Image (cartoon, rainbow, N blue to C red; front, side, top):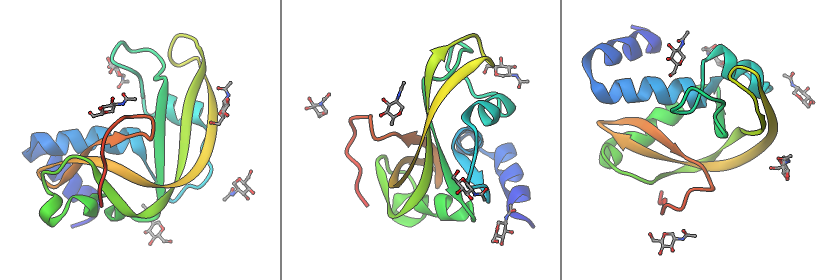
Length: 138
Ligand SMILES: *[C@@H]1O[C@H](CO)[C@@H](O)[C@H](O)[C@H]1NC(C)=O
Ligand SMILES: *[C@@H]1O[C@H](CO)[C@@H](O)[C@H](O)[C@H]1NC(C)=O
Ligand SMILES: *[C@@H]1O[C@H](CO)[C@@H](O)[C@H](O)[C@H]1NC(C)=O
Ligand SMILES: *[C@@H]1O[C@H](CO)[C@@H](O)[C@H](O)[C@H]1NC(C)=O
Ligand SMILES: *[C@@H]1O[C@H](CO)[C@@H](O)[C@H](O)[C@H]1NC(C)=O
């Protein structure tokens, strides 16, 4: 079974996998090094809770989604503040002019940093940006 089929199965079976579906939509970019915040956030319908442009959003670039889901394996399966051992290339999107979605304007920055997530039932369900005041440990 392919990874995406497994993810689909997970979506059907479990609420935490539903959380992962959102995490994946909002934060994971496979095999693409250059993205445009406006294009990807429009294509993926990424908004804040009010349906407006999301002020901050970070995309994690990877060649293998499992490098991210594996963070929630083993003793981390239900741990908050899980810090990756490795760094990932990131694109951080910051809204500079908050029009009505999808007419958002962004300032985007490339970074290479460790990532910090919340794990529920072995799935990452929340990405902590470096601006959030939370303790993250490997
Ligand atoms: C991504 O963008 C950088 C900087 O603009 C450029 O040097 C690089 O060649 C691009 N990579 C790809 C795969 O398009
Ligand atoms: C986009 O997201 C909004 C708010 O979360 C939702 O109401 C809407 O149905 C979504 N649109 C599509 C095309 O998925
Ligand atoms: C991403 O690239 C890797 C390495 O080139 C490849 O093995 C993998 O199948 C690609 N994945 C997708 C979803 O394109
Ligand atoms: C754009 O992002 C860079 C780096 O994060 C920051 O230094 C700069 O102040 C930002 N500009 C705006 C207009 O938000
Ligand atoms: C960050 O959180 C700690 C502990 O929860 C708190 O003591 C501290 O004041 C917070 N710092 C900021 C800048 O909010």
